Image (tube, rainbow, N blue to C red; front, side, top):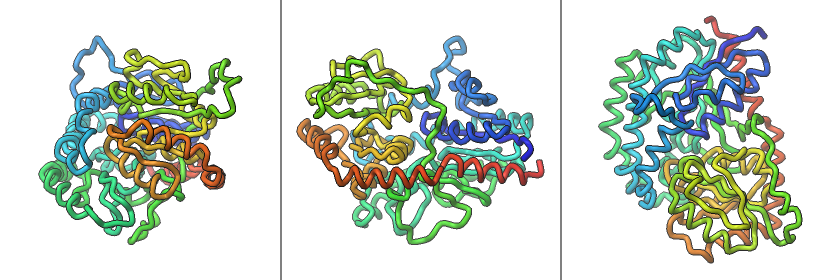
Length: 433
């Protein structure tokens, strides 16, 4: 196959960007040219991996002399709105979800001229978007368009399933109608405005109350079959599930040498609230305090506020950790329920305690709990005994570990990264551009 140009545009957060990096690395290894139209704070982080950077701003730069860290746009936004995470999912619709969609829409509109110039300059054979909001330039440039859903698949609507972002149970319709009505009330005006703007830029109309188009040729969603939903309306053949999409670009991780002589009953636990959730230092400090009073050891992803967090002797950590290198080493994962962490934990066969904060994390937490692969706790109201008991119960559950070993083997055998690269490469080869 001759070399083709593939343009990736991920959301400016670590989950979608890392997902795209994993797939792009496989395509790069096959000789294809990879261009990332990533948000500008990723400057200098993608070129060392062999990709071209054609960066975009989602808002006017605040200070050109002080470049942002990767994903800083959303870190700042989340930090400012963190108090909203203590509210129920239906309460968050007005005070967190709608402002978040507004910020996403504003970013899409702001970067549209720059994105069109990037597409004209790079002339991709296929474009790949891993985001929750659409960009007219991507669906009108003439190249095949691929959508990746690296959020919980409730984002792909189905009338028989709970509404996305609700965290409601799969087998109980209680609360669904109220949540859907409130979502409509809080989001209808914004959606109508964005839909009109999208069409004015030459894009097709959006589906009702959705902020992104599906592709007519290929859509990929990342979610293990073991967690996936039984749909009332089967997805079309343009939709392909990837049980996982675990990148192989991260460095190895070495545990502290003194831990090699830890007692047998001292298990190893990974704590990560993601780059966004870990910005809530009050929550992180409480978790560190509570977990410090157990007999287990912890590898802690400290996040952007690492300098404000102190770890006790039974913990080690850093601002950034190579998550896919850490996960194979641990016995249990304590997570915010981000889609990447959930799918990666399943890929490596690890039970989870999920402490959701926002967006699809509630849906992932509910799904992990109702399928029996972990426990969902109230993020801000859990008691110390609840967390301690959940850790010990999951670690000691031999049958659960056997189930997870089986699931892990199945997921790895399906080769999500390679499957995604194969399908995208096939589209690129067929492109007339």
